[in-house]
Image (cartoon, rainbow, N blue to C red; front, side, top):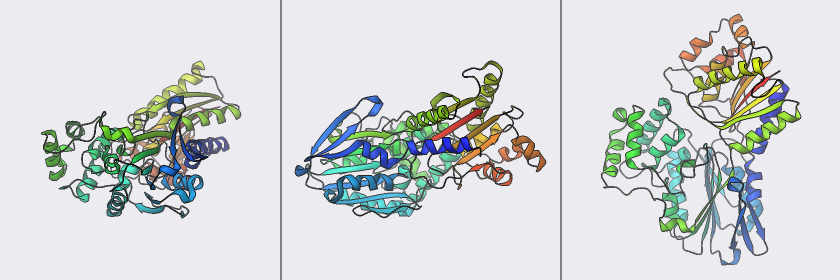
Length: 445
């Protein structure tokens, strides 16, 4: 990687630091706990009298949960009564008041089911003088599985895997998960009621819809059983989904199972959901860093979605536009985008959405002198690989030909990770302890 690519990646990760985000939003002021909400550039503060809190329980789920909890402990210290969180396996420091456990991701496993049971036990029986501080970040939906009665964990694993391979968006995946769960789609808030709930949320979903981040455990759910059924049918998963899943969803559609809590439900009157960090923060930090490097920075979008291969074609078109017309910015240029692409898996290779995007871009930017393109997941993990993403340039196709590597053959197998392992170009950050979607960069000298 070129040095400027490394610096841009570091700037994105620094801006998404979960501990910093928590400290911006939480403080003790005299005898009050102050929670600051800066969602959509509107600053508002909420106050909780510490002396009136009977129990202060910290719970959490997600890839950034340990770092978020460490920051909470630094602010609240001995005021915390009890705590438990679940995260993806990796390296993290032990905490003093909050226990950290690990579980499977992106496919839920039995360890996550056990943690979910313990978490429910921790909040069950709460009363109005209790405060539950919930720390939510990307990956929470898979890490905290608690299937409804009649659905096994294996059923959820199977339908989750089927949806991931179908190219389903995170919103679609979560709409289905919420209607198979005892915790998602607002049900965790119902478990905590009548306690007050404050959710500090590091968003990994485009547009920050509260109901979609981690499948919205403490947010009203606008989706229905009918929506979940339609998603499975549209993605051609319905006929192969486990029978128990289809049976439960059909019962729910007919009104024989309770719908997820909706807007207007009184239980949400005592719930405060606050976004403390998102993709926009990291994208802006990258653009600022690009400016200090002498590049003309331009933010394309923070809502990049769709198939990775189609997005690669778009970036190729943009590269030619910049080269020929100087639009949207003249060279030296840095075009930045944030979001989350999808991959419809048809082969048996190994890779992730960022690596697939980079591989698909190899031919798109071939011969465009001075052009470099990089894509990486801010959590340090792109699909079921140990890489965060990949970087390619105008000479990647030539180097591949010299080694006898055909990008099209690897694309046909969805085998982007093996392509870059053979050629070089993987971005490997290791687990970052945060997750605010992906970053896509294009530099043109």
